[in-house]
Image (cartoon, rainbow, N blue to C red; front, side):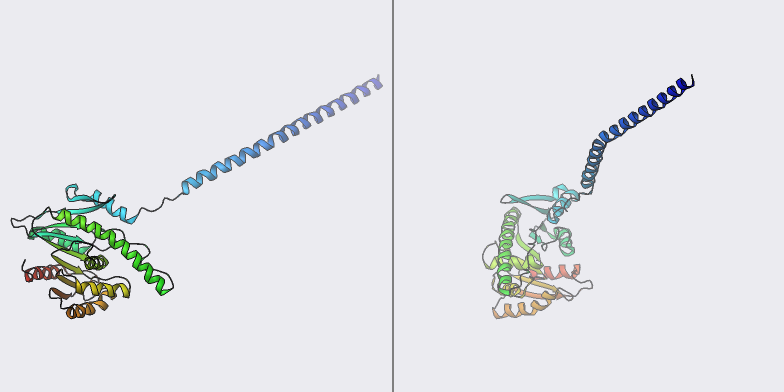
Length: 309
């Protein structure tokens, strides 16, 4: 009997050990079978997370500054004052403010410097708000975008000069086309054409008048006219002295260094070329680059009166 009990106990122990071993093997096999899928799932989750992170961190390119100027003008200014004109397949913005008197004197075309909005120049803003009450319809022009590669950054001086010449020629063609369209628009209003232009755009327009690319106004007022290289400024000085349009050449006591350098040279060259209708005047200012409003208007009115208009 005892022997029978010992045999039963041994058999039961072996059976229990075998069952435990089989169960453990099954669990291990199940875990092993699950590991690849779990790894794949984890890798997939990481990829999805990385993709969503890349999308979240994607920063859009900045809006083109020239386009931003146009959008701001259309958004913030009165719709009736904003007029879009076409230059070939491209459009550009003008702001038209009709004169408010019974005696129309003419059209004052206001051209800011490149890199400026049509409404960011303090001097031209003053004219835009003041001249209509003096009998002038004003047309403020959003100028073409400044070329990004001017002045040239090439090392060789000849290569610099060639690139500057090419870039300015392209920009001048564009600006001339824009201003011709503006002159056509100005012809819808009575009176003479007064053009007030700033800085580099003024210099480029003078060069285009010398080359007969643009229709000339009756009176040209230049505010701190200059370009960004000595050679280009010399071309500007020569053109200034040789075009037929009457010119009021204004600059400031505290002005751009190029302007201060070429101002006396412009006066000398105009005198050498016997340019009768040329007046140069320096205006004193407290803030660098800003024209004193009353003195500016007084100088322009005096020049117009001197010409007999």
